[in-house]
Length: 417
Ligand code: MN
Image 1 (cartoon, rainbow, N blue to C red):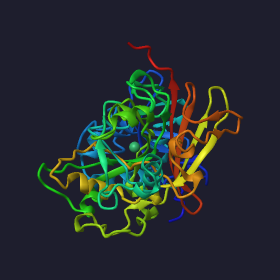
Image 2: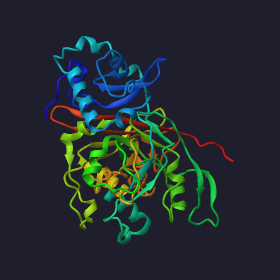
Image 3: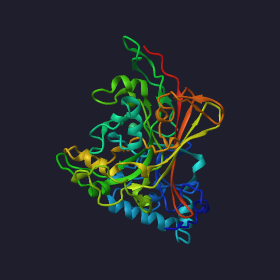
C-alpha cells in the first residue's frame, strides 16, 4: 500500500510517524483543557470530542470521545473500529469536502500534553522472545539449561500490575527492595542497584471473553484492538532474589511505561509477519492460522542527565517466537476471562546479534561488559537521571507507521524506612 495523501501537509512526508495510513488514538490536553480523545495526523492532533460535537463523527455511544480514555470506543467492537477509521480517512484525505470544517478541530501536537490513552484493566507480561530467553537463561543457568523445558510449548507469562502502567514522559522512581548479594548471609533492603528496561510491544485487548470459555488463535487476533510500545522496567537484583518459585513480583510491579498513541491493528495490516519456524510442533490450540506478528523496527536510546542520547539497541518485533494472539489464546485457555482494556506485554524483544538485545542485562551481560555511550559515559545498568527511550515504526514504501516514543527518566529512590 502506498502513502495515502492528506490535506494536512505534514502528514505526507516520508519521515512523519503519523501519515493518513496510521491514524493512531491518544488522549491529549492543551493548556487548561480537560484531557480528551485525539487522533494523530502529521504534526497535528484531531480533537475527536469537538468533531463529535460538530456532528462530523457520530457513534452509537454519545460523548465517547469527550473522555480521558478510549475504552468506550474500544468496547464497541471491530465493526465500529472499521467504520470510525473509514470516516477519519474520508475527513482527512486530500480533496475531502470536509476540509474547512475539520481544520478548526486540529491542535498542534507541539502544544499538547499526552495522557494515558486507555484505562488499563489488567496487565499481563510474557516472556516470548527466544533470543532474550536464551540470553537470560544462559546467564542464570548455563547454555545447556538456558531454555526452560516448557518454553517451546507455552508462551510463559505472569500477572502484572495495571496500577503502575504509566504514559510516556512520566518520571520513574528507582524502586527500593529486598536483595541478597551472593556472598551475603542475609538479605538487605534499599535502592535497586541493577535497574533495567525491557523493550516490548503491548497489545490492547478490545473485547471480552467469558469465564470458562477458551478462544481460538484467530478469535484472539480478532479481539486485539491495537499496539503500543511498552517498557517493562525491571529491578534485576530484586528479581534475582524473589523470583523463585512464583516469578517476578516487586521487581516489575513498580512501573511499566507505554507510548501515548495506540496504533490500530488496521494500520498495521500491511506489515503482518509470520512467527519463526517452530522448533517443536505446538499443541493444536496454539497454532496460528496466518501471520500474526508485525514487521516493526524498534530502537532503544539512553541519555545521561543533560547529555545527548545514544542508540544502544536496534531490533524488530517480527523476531518474537509467539504472537500476541497466541499469548491471548493461551491466557484464556484455562477459562480465564479477558476484558476490553486489558494489556498484554510481548516479552523482551531481542535479536540474535549483540546490538539487537532489548535489555541492559543482555547488552552488558549481567553488568560484566559495561557499555560506553557516544558521550563517553559507561553504563552497566541505569543510573539516576538517565533517560531511556523506546522508538518503533513499521516501514512502508515512502511512509512509516510510527508509534511515537516511550520515554522515562529515573529519579532517585525514596529514603525508606
Ligand atoms: Mn517483561
